[in-house]
Length: 285
Image (cartoon, rainbow, N blue to C red; front, side):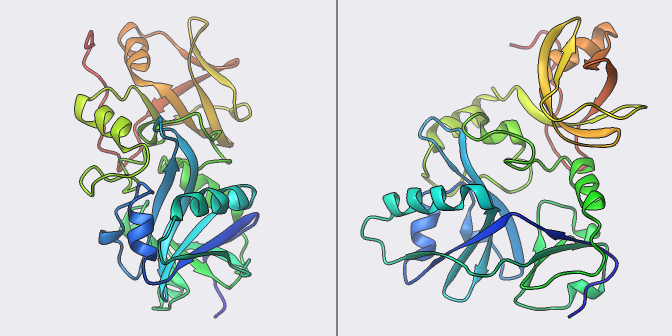
């Protein structure tokens, strides 16, 4: 199948397969995603957390014959496999790295949505955008900048591209907003910490969309209010970027009409279009 329309080829990705009789049972007990709600045509975000609840590895998970496929940055594949093998114990599950290296993504393209085991709908995005991951193929139109822009405008943060591992909680990267963490499926590694944040409403750092009238500085640039750091930029694309910020301090800046700066550039921050979190009430603890 030749892909056309809005599409891009993704490089430096790796695929890890978890297969076997108890593959789903094993993964369900260690990762953040609720696999019981994962459809055959779907792809959802997930993470393996530290016991302290921070994102140690992130990936996209989908179903394959006799198991599940984890799609992740190539740089973390070996370490993730070792960690999963440590947790596997006596579970009847095999953990292997796929030899497949071709991964494409397509959006707003009806042709690429033809039903195929190689095509999965990316549930992080609104269904109307028809964002699909296509495995084992490449596209003719390699619009990687368009893909980055789409991800940023929808507030979809990814490890390696946007944030460092072992630094953020799932809430900080909006995993709870896009189906990447479940609070109803039961225990998983780090579950106690993230569940406490959820039920006590203590999540204060969030991923927002940063925009400006001019190009933004590079990833990692601090966001400041009156020289006080409130967060930092993730990946940038022209005048937009993912931003990880303390939303209580963003609200304070908005209330006082104090500019939010990324280096020398003034930015505005908005909640991603499909995210459900809200800004904190002023003076709320």
